[in-house]
Amino acid sequence: MLTNQASCKWCDHDGETLASNASHYMVDKPHPTHPAVLVVSRRHVESPFEMTPNEWQDLGDMLENARTWLAKF
Image 1 (tube, rainbow, N blue to C red):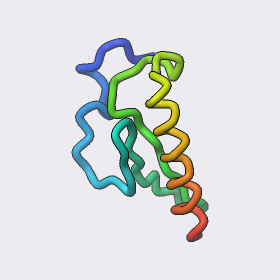
Image 2: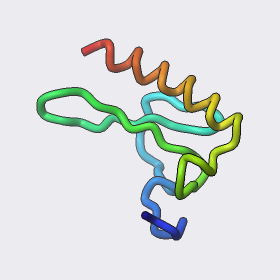
Image 3: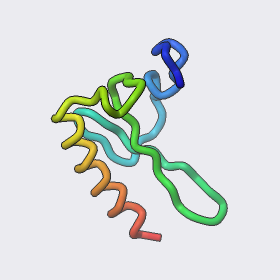
């Protein structure tokens, strides 16, 4: 488990995102046989249990975005 924000490649992500909200962003995870996405917290957390109630709600919204995006395939 990463314990140092400086070593977290997702904290400084500046690439293309498929969707985002106040707490999370979603990126494409290309795979040769099936589509996949990754939903990442904007705030560095070492465990999902560190997320606030608002971050959990935003995660639910982002998962709806992921389902919609993946349904295209």
